[in-house]
Length: 174
Ligand SMILES: [Zn+2]
Image 1 (tube, rainbow, N blue to C red):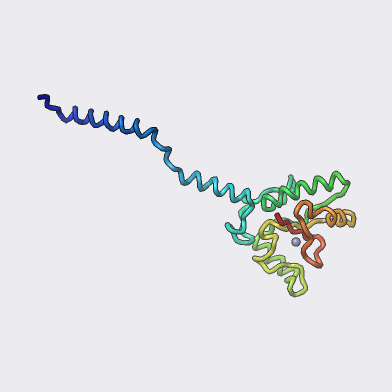
Image 2 (tube, rainbow, N blue to C red):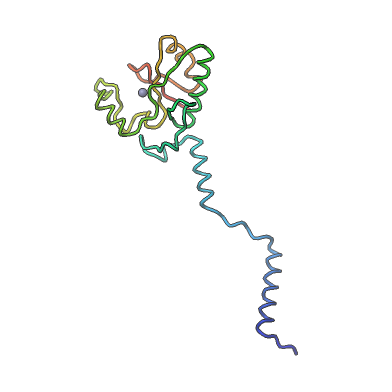
């Protein structure tokens, strides 16, 4: 009778484990929760759902997208749509300038102080409620021709003139 030493047993156990592993197939790739969370965040961002992730006026600049090369930033879908709109206007010989875009909370407070609250006859939203604070509103510099062009074409790009007394203010709705 053959007596196995400890080394022999260990070797056989390793062989058995190897056979079991071969039977079970290749080991599953370890789940990486960090990378799936990152891709989920990217998907959310590309869908433009900033409102569930940030507070109004507290969106980091990196979560916004630039409108062409204007230096103005909006939520990504609004930035893309406005970039297309500006190109179309240019093709039609219409010049549209951008006065204001995303507005952080502190800027909203400052604007309310300088221009008064809209509800009280002024021109500023209550801080923390402005569509500018979601990167979904833009103030445009429009001459009469550009104003008419926006009224005729803005909605094709998702932009509507939604605030009485503010013909320059256009809100993006996906
Ligand atoms: Zn505005």
